Length: 427
Image (cartoon, rainbow, N blue to C red):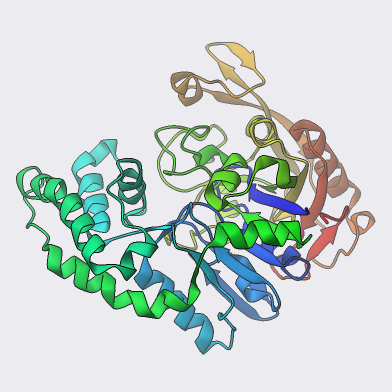
């Protein structure tokens, strides 16, 4: 049962799309198991760049079946728009499967997300305003709309009525907004039903049968470990579980079926949205990382906050995910620095701390303790093997591997599909 989980080991945006795409030609299924269109992947194929927001990266690999699992929240309008855009570019999307148990992002979820964030002002979380959090809240409160509900108008109407009973009170009396009409929402959602029906399936059954038949299944997380609702920098987190355990609940497979867990690490660190970030840079180095690395959110369009590599959070990601391997991305971005600082520990209230503090207050006050590693000036984008890298680049990779607690099995040396050094096979 060759099942692999591939996830972000930092705050997201580590280059999971490139890693997933690299494996896509060798796997039979690629499964998104959490998140929604608040996560984005950029995949470069030849001279073509694809920005994926909701669809699994495997949709670009012929022969691979892309799956949106039950743990994902789906905005039907975004889904159809993304499918249409890929079809126009000649990408075959007919093999896509969507879980009938995945929850639907409704128009009122988006409205609530935007007005709530605006209302919070300086206390805002930094959401994307796409209705992700409110949809997960509806799911937990048992008033959510699932994909399968789009095929029973009576049930759909009852559920929308139940959800809007409370939400309209909040919108009108707290936020001074107009109430949302039940009929309008139902009509819009029903309008998507037939268009997505060919893709809807019992994905739990499909995936478990595939594993029983020794098919290779890759579970792809959105966001990153430090944005996990339980294990991230709460409350500045997403509303789901991007960590490895989320693959089991978000796709309906048991933990004993997972054979390998791969963490994606950027050779430096970035973050989008509010929240603590110990190694964040506010100087020319930070701006250079942002410019050279093209650090702008695929989905949000927001500039990413940039900083040096943080080995403390890398070790944390290894532990909470049970990582077996790392895929190190964007090593080429660091070319040109004479010295490259790496955060090896934190200083909190005058004490050196080498593990991620569980206290939110401590993490907010953590100051990075740096160790400087020698840099390199040679172009590494044409490197095909580890030995092709400059000695200092090799030493940098080895140091990160030792600090992070799991072997680095692949290295991204450029944005292209073929600009990757594979040290150990993931399969």
